[in-house]
Image (tube, rainbow, N blue to C red):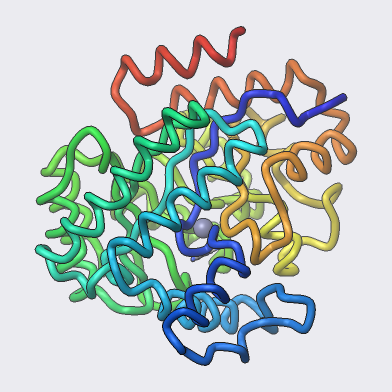
Length: 327
Ligand code: ADE
Ligand code: ZN
């Protein structure tokens, strides 16, 4: 099976985490910033584990200093995604890394990202939408400032609100105020949970934040009553198997719970998380899943229809991507 040309819908992509290392190195050189310590000898990102990954990630963002940097990043990221057959992608955008949560600055960064996204859509046919995402380990107060940026820019492009970062820091309920602000602004909600935290972390995100999707969520498999509840409620899991395997959460593709969750009626979807950090692409995710679980083109199509139906976009955009998936 050639998974290259298969149209794909990606719901879970960290924007800075999708930055090719050569792009970040190039910006560092232009700006005379020494971040050589975050790269391996062969030019990839160097980190020891998830927590060190978060540090390296933040160091990489230190070279992204202007709206124009984000304009260039947008073109680079969408070119990579389109090359993997992605027709629609949602990306986590953090005002923390775009002018330090200052609303005026954030609007300028957002404008630059949207301008570049329009160019990429014309060039490659790929559609981008943004999910504003505070960083959990920066704490609930900063998340409120981020939620204000989200509420003030919610619309056709900024359609969602999420939470990323160190799942072991704080509880979902600490972020309830920020999520309430986002909900009241009409944003749709997702939250990273069940990656480094267990099933209780997933349950708390559902009960305390009222999210309709969960970033990862795979450790729900450790509590089958929770799996049934997720399936019954129709909560969608943004699974990123390559990321989980690279970071050592599961020892192999065959041991990843995505297939078991799918079999138990949970709405699973497929994403890359931070592709260059985890040495993956959407094509690679599909190839490895096909090998591990014998999934064929029809199975992948069903999963992408699930993703399209769970996308945080307007109905005209959804109809457009569903039509492409049917073609
Ligand atoms: N930020 C970037 N990638 C992440 C991940 N996999 N989990 C939590 N926060 C992240
Ligand atoms: Zn993620």
